[in-house]
Image 1: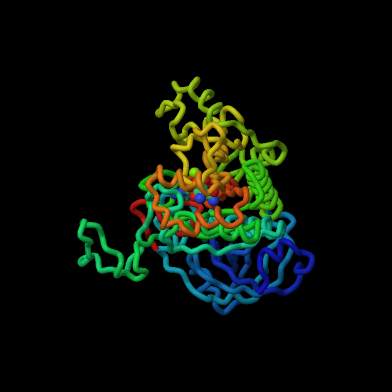
Image 2 (image 1 turned 120 degrees about the vertical axis):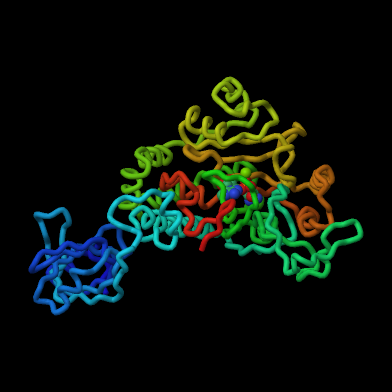
Length: 461
Ligand code: 4AD
Ligand code: MG
């Protein structure tokens, strides 16, 4: 079978020749002696029109086809200079591979994203989700290419772990114990010692701690895998299961970290503009009108940089615009992040050096003793897309931070070892893959960039 993508990319090769194409029916129109089928074959944005006629023995069956039916068409590809589409197939045979019931939910009209979420097994057949998931696939490939071209080693970090990297306690527990009969210790806590791993375990919230061990062996590494957070946040940018890309670089500081993050995002933007022009044009026309201008502007400018302290000064002056009022020490909310990147800088911005109280234990303490060498990258339309930091590489200071936060050193022996045996300056960041897909497509809800989203109260399919 020839694909519609091949036909569009290499039309001279197929015009006026006999070809076979397999696809799904988007619409059927018939008159007494002939009819039109519009096919979508999943390989390309455009559809292909098929003309069929009553000399075919199954003419009446074809006329009766419903939207969604699967067919294989054999015929001649002919140019149609007068028509909207550049060519069509004059069919010789239309083989019905699988008919479609008349209650097929995807009819020609436009469906709302809310409705399509209820049929996540069928929505990939629509134009919008064809574009979203093809671009999602390309972004994943571009990210691997970016790191592989720079000799980063791809590390598969575990999904089941005993640690809580971010220390936020937002973990899905993993157990094989019968919930009806969970053993308790004398002080009333759940006793995991007889459980599968002999201790409490959970799904990972980040691969970073394991990633750091590989950075201290290979210098430059990255992870790219699923992560899980039991955050009770019902928002358009939080999912319970999402993918994260986490590079980690040794002999490097926060500045190097930001240079890497900016280069990566620009690389990926350039890649999708080049490799999915039809899809990007579609998003620009039907999903987010300013998308292409905005992305091109990003390619032609430097990301802004501002310290947390300066950002708070700017935000405090605009406190009348926010639901949550800002003051030094508070965590920035989405509304503040978006105000900074959309109203103040009008492009991506790195906010650096946050108060240590609102950041994770592993971040390097700055000279002031109050802030840490952290950076968040904020982008228009979303807010935080990347969170990263230089890591605390001093054994004593790290130990002190862990004690302050009540973390048990025995649970982090391997992590402390890295500071004991050839510790280096090192840094890394986590890019939320779904947020990256949202940013590049203009889609405004994380549920619409994940094939089968898991969010609070929702784990369908
Ligand atoms: O800022 P976070 O929590 O950072 C870390 O996990 C670090 N260990 C990363 C590192 O330095 N190696 O998460 C990183 C990114 C966020 O900026 C956001 O884009 C995404 O992960 N993210 C989520 N995306 C979707 N749904 C959620 N619930 C998310 N939580 C974080
Ligand atoms: Mg963060």
